[in-house]
Amino acid sequence: MHTITVVALGPGSPDLLTLGALRQLKKAARVVLRTARHAAVPFLEGEGVKAESLDALHDSSPDFDALAGACADRVLELARKGAVTYAVADPARDETVRLLRERAGDAVRVLPGVAPEAHMLAQGAWAGQWMVSSAVGLAPHDAQQPLAVTELDGRALAGEVKLKLLPLYGDGARVLFFPPSEALWRKSVPIPLADLDRQPRYDHTAGFVVYPAPLLERTEFDAADLLAIMRRLRARDGCPWDREQTHLTLVKHLVEEANEAAAALLEEDWDAAADELGDVMLQLAFHAVVGEEQGTMEWGSFLRAICGKLIRRHPHVFGESHAGDAAEALTRWEEAKGKENRPGEGPGDRMDAVPKGLAPLLYAEKVQKIAAKVGFDWHSAGDALSKVGEEAQELREAMETGANVQEELGDLLFSAVNVARLLGMSADEALRLASGKFVRRFKSMEISIKNDKKIPDALTDLDFEVYWNRSKTEKP
Image (cartoon, rainbow, N blue to C red):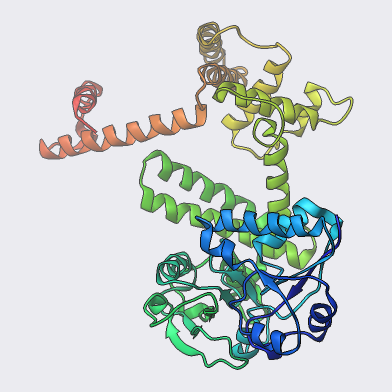
C-alpha cells in the first residue's frame, strides 16, 4: 500500500486553501478529488493541477454510507498502484477519510487545513470557548458555550437540528445564520432559533452559530446551569445561608429530599416526583460546589465513580458474560461487585463498611444480604416469618418484666426486615405504604365522625373501632 496524503480544500474560497495543501497538490503525481463541485477547483486547474474526481460515485450511490464506502474503496484501489493525494473539504469530519484511516492505518497522512466553521467563528465575536458539530452528527451537549453547526444542507435537516436545540437554548435563542456561499467573507443573518428551518436556501455550505441565553433569561436549563447557580449562591455576595453550609450540615437535607422524592414516585405523582428529584439534584450540586472549594470532591468525581461502577458491574452488557433475565443480571452484578472487595476482607468487614447513617430498615437489609451471601440465611420467607412470631412473644415478655424492651423491639423489627427481603420487597417501601394507608383511612374516619356530628374525644374504643372498620371498606 502506497501513501495516501489527504489535503483539505477548506470551506470553499481558494483564499482558504493552505500553502501546504497547494504545494502538495502541485507536486502530486495523482490527485483525486472527493468532488469537483468545490469553489477551489477552478483555481487549482488554473495552477496546473490535474485531478480526477469521484463525482460519478456521488451520482450512482444509493445513500451516503454507500457513497463513503465506494469512495474509500476507489482511493485504496489507486493507492495499491502508487501514491495518491486525496482532496476533501474537511478531513476532520469526512467519512471517507475515517474509513481510509480504519482500513489503511499508517499509510494515510493528513495535512490540516481551514475548517468549514472558521468563517463563522471569525464573525461570531465570542471570547470564550466554542463547540463545533456537523448538522448530521449533532450530539447531546450542554448549552454553556456558543455552538457552530456546519453542513446544514436541507430544510428537513434544519428542522431536526432545531428540535434538538430548542430544549437546550430556548426558541428565542440568538442565531447567526450563514446562507449557502463559498465566498471568503460571508454575511450572516440574525434570526431566532425558532426560524432555523424557515430560511430561503440551504446546501452543504450553509451553517449557523447559536448563542446561550443569559442565565436569568433562560427557560431551559441543564446540569452545568445548576452548578453555575450554586457557585453564584456560594459567592461572597451570594446567599448568607448557602455560604455557611458544609458537607456535614447538608447531610440531613440530602436524606430528607431523597425520602420526599421516593414518596412522590411511590404515589406516582410525576409532577411532584420531577420537583422532588430536582431537589435531590440540588443537593448533589451543593456538595459538588462545596467540594470544589474545599478540595474534597467535585461533579466530575460523581460521574467518574458512577460511570466506572456501572461499566464494571455490567459485564453482561460491556463485557463477555451473558444475562438472560433480571435474576441472572443481578447475579452478574453481585459477582462483579465481589471482585471489588479488598483481599482478605470478610463478611464482617463488609458489614462494618455499610454506612451507619443509612435509614435503619435499609441498614438492616444490607447487613442481612451480606450474611446471606455466605449462606447464613433463612431458607424461605415463611421460615423467617415464624421468627417474627417468636420475637413478638419475647417482646411481650420483656414488656411484662420491663427489661430489655428496646432490644426486643429491635429484634422484632429486624426479623420483619428479613421477611421483606426474602419476599424480594423493600421493608422501607412496605412501611411507607402502610403508613400512607393508615393516613388515608384515618382521614376517612375523621370525615365520618364529623359528618355524624360527633366529637372524637367523646368516642369510646368501640366507637372508634366501628368507624375504623367502616374506613377500611371505602375505596382509597
